[in-house]
Length: 410
Ligand code: MLT
Image (tube, rainbow, N blue to C red):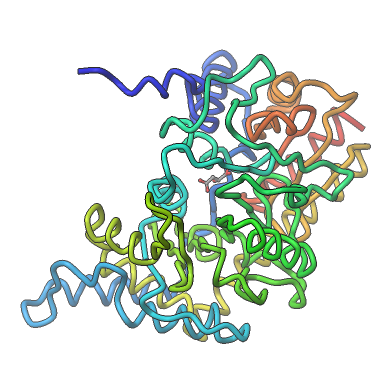
């Protein structure tokens, strides 16, 4: 069979497995090194008790003929859809219909899959640096040429997010773009978009008939209640934006897997004959064809994160990780690093000492301090010279990491 040639355009390994490979090689060569991993953003706190209790009860239901369940509703059970509508949206003054929410098994899958909605030759814009799945999934689908020597893919529009703009991408001057991916709070920089930023993006998207894919996987980490958590808090966003939400970072679900996507009924794409087509209807068709729903037990767990206890317990976990972020920020600053992020996001973004290449600093940090982070260049060419540290870890590990950084670099 003829294989998809677009895979040849990708770097050999996805970012995080590549980091894992390097760390395993280091650990094998230095078996006594106590390596602390602040690379992949993976939660470390156990599931909240309210979530565990709900999942146990759901398993018990599945064990009895009278309450056993097979396939569930494709878009999700009403108990979860209702909780999402009330807690994630109505509480912020936003009304979202149950048939506009699509519960899934993770935002990584959602953000990779949703490009099936776009024309084969759709023009894609991405903030740079950003979560690598947006680029890689569009490369696999053939929307780019092979990358140039600077690592940029021809055919993609890069929106550099630099220190000068607070790592927030600005809308391009003109149009000609079909889709833009925005992630706020941002992975990897930790930058958060304000109401003004989002208002400017929504105005741009509506003016140029573009779609915004708004990835809000880290919204629970926003500390200022005045900052928007959903793009639908901005007037007009229902006509131009899809939103991604996840339970991974907000409820400790990286190993449980649950997320959802909002596709408003107003959203329209342009069909082959110039006619308007409903993206909600298209995604519903796609979802029900290729996905059989998130498991009942998992959806019960996700719904429990909205109960009074579940909310208090999961917010407590978020606060714990944000305290880790504060310790990392303070420690790195005291060691002389230029530090960004970590205020509304569980990621610290730092300039490498002397502007060293990101992967060179990765090696230096690993060999000198036995610490693992993520090279900024792994998130896009504009991430070169930067480095990401994750605040997801035990307090003891974060304190030890800070002590090592100060010892080695201060
Ligand atoms: C990260 O470290 O960037 C995240 O864990 C990636 C993800 O959520 O897939």
